[in-house]
Image 1 (cartoon, rainbow, N blue to C red):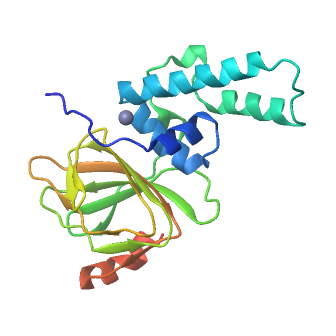
Image 2 (image 1 turned 180 degrees about the vertical axis):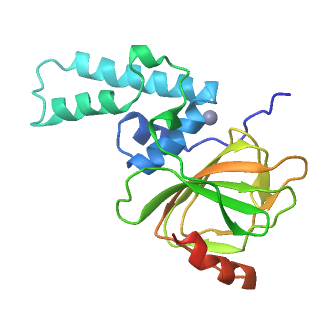
Length: 207
Ligand SMILES: [Zn+2]
């Protein structure tokens, strides 16, 4: 059964992703979406072609100091070297921690993205019907669904869907029935949990 992807990163996010302007945590979560979403993969390829054409069209413009190195670094970090192939799993370059119980029906495992400025990347696995604690963000929370589905006030998010939340949003996700929901999340600055359960979970989630 194919699950149509309906929630994508914003145009601005895809442009930043293509330009190498995202931090590693967000880049990983976006790449998990792009590797599953032909529409966004096409858009990234188009943006890369536009960027390349722009460079070729301006031969008289000297590169800013360091910009060549920055470009090479981005190419290096894009993870699409020929031997890896284009269909590789962006997660394969990271170490995943063991699944840890963080609350009823919810487990979490770490992803070895270096902790810079309090940004964490982790995977979350929640049983069908689980109501995740009502929470508010202090920074961004970007999520790519890997398996299963959850829903909140902005819609249903199934496998491959991308949820780009920021500090203005308050969330109360519920895992859809059927199968466990597994997500990868890049979280900045922690979250504020509003329910009693959430307050009990808080020390565990802020690892
Ligand atoms: Zn997409």
